[in-house]
Every structure is written in structure tokens, then in C-alpha cells.
Length: 155
Image 1 (cartoon, helix red, strand yellow):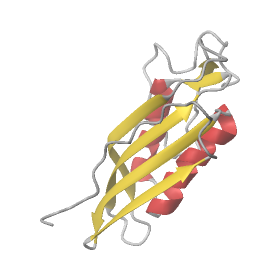
Image 2 (cartoon, one colour; image 1 turned 120 degrees about the horizontal axis):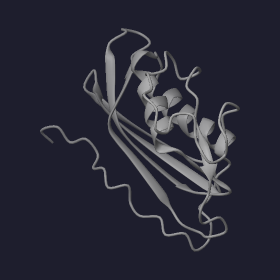
Image 3 (cartoon, rainbow, N blue to C red; image 1 turned 30 degrees about the vertical axis):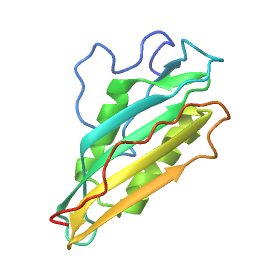
């Protein structure tokens, strides 16, 4: 949770917000889990995620799917949207960007479990898919397929 907000009102909620200049400057807000103690899955999909290639500076595009089993807190969706949007001016390799998003959320939110799938569109003719999870899923958690087909092109 941000130091500038109360537990009942995240910093970004209900306010006009600007896109952070970088992922490091982005503030992720967390709120108490309304179903703390229950085992359930939350999914966020970002089908138009963008970052910059660190070699060429050109945009790279991905479909990100983020699944997590909440612990004591949940991530506030507007702050997550702003965090993901902050990558539009960030240079990073697909692997570093995908895993870094997952690790930051795990470090700050402390979910019971988290996985992220980064389905990157082809660069140089090669699609790159990156997958990371914090640990094995908790026993009894329903974990559906992420539903994103591998890139096939004309295949």
C-alpha cells in the first residue's frame, strides 16, 4: 500500500492519473483482500502490452496474462494498469520485462501464488513466449489455461 493513502482509499482510485515515466516510478496500490482466507484465482489480461526493444528502441508488443491467488491483499486494478502502461517508454528484453512484472507483484503483494505468461509478438520473425510463476500452485486452486494460442503466422 502506498504511504500516501489510507487502507480504504488507494492513491489512484477516483482520481485522474498520469502515466508514470518508468516502471520504477510507478506506484502499485494494494487493498485488503475482501475474501482473505479463501482460495480463489484472479486473472488480469493485457492484450495490448507494449515495451521498447533495448537494441533498436522500437516497440515490442505482447499479450500478458497474470493469474494470482490472493493472500492478505489484492492489487488495485487502476494502479496495475498504470504500472503496465509505464513500460511503453521502458527498454527491456522480453524475459526481463515479463519476469520482472511477476517478481515485483510477488515481492510487494505477497500473494499465495502468482504466474505470468508473456506472449510476445514476433520480432525478427521469432515469437517469444515467457512464463514465470512464484511456486507450485496451492493444492485445490483451479488454474485454467491462459487461453492464448501460440503465434502461428501463416503456419
